[in-house]
Amino acid sequence: MILSQIEKKQLLNFIKSHYVDYHDVRLLIARDLEEDISQQMKEDEELSFEEALEKAYKKYGVIGFSDASEEYMKKINTYFYKKVIFKVVKDEASTLRFWLLAVMSFLIIYSVITSLITMPFVLAGGFIVLIILGLIFYFRKLHKEIKELKKNDNYYYLDQLLISNNSILFPFTYIPFMLAPHIGGLTENEAFSMAILAFFTMISFIAYYLIYFRLYKDRSEILKAYKETFLKNKLDYKLEVI
Image (cartoon, rainbow, N blue to C red; front, side, top):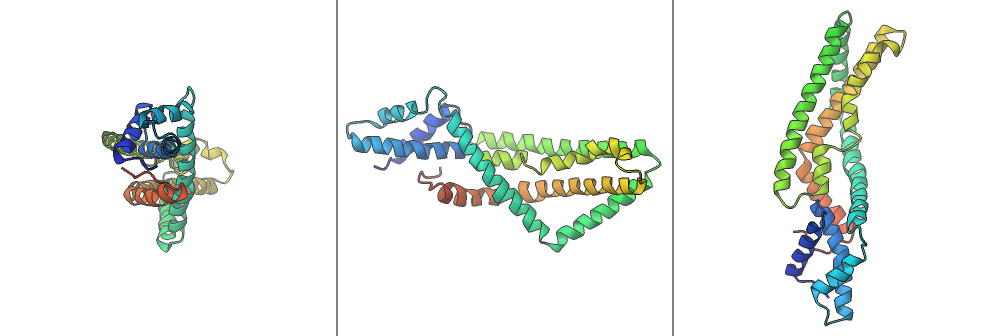
């Protein structure tokens, strides 16, 4: 038995009312419920949609959809790391532009650091200011973007991952800030220590580049691919994406 569009919308509203915040997680839970409800109504033709829904929901126990939501978010996280983050890094690393950007960044950063080597307070202050400005810029855009997306009921968990960049890339952005105070104890060779600091600063710069220009800027295309591959194909998605 196939549920009507009205019943499917009722199903999504029911899941939303039980504290499932993300639309894609709601859709995936709705798919499971739809199969259960359809089977019940097929076996008992006198059973109403509402009665079948209540019976299906009771199977989730006292914690409701919490465990189901967590399981689906784990699967979405796996997709995000393997199919988004890894793909972005792999694609960029296969281009000449990426390596030219890395080499140029390293050389410029190293020359700046070595020129300020006799002024450690200026160097440390410069790192702190740059990182703070980067974080302010990032979190201001993050807050504004999430606020706008949450006005729309179709707020996907993948949206949250793309905007918050809850990934292995973000920690690289503040490595220089953590490393700079201890740079003198890394090696006995001052030039080599500066090279290490320049290298990780370059990594930080590239991480910001990937986060902003590849994940943040391309998030609509990434979300579209996610809907077409993960929601519909990998999980045998049947409920219409609303």
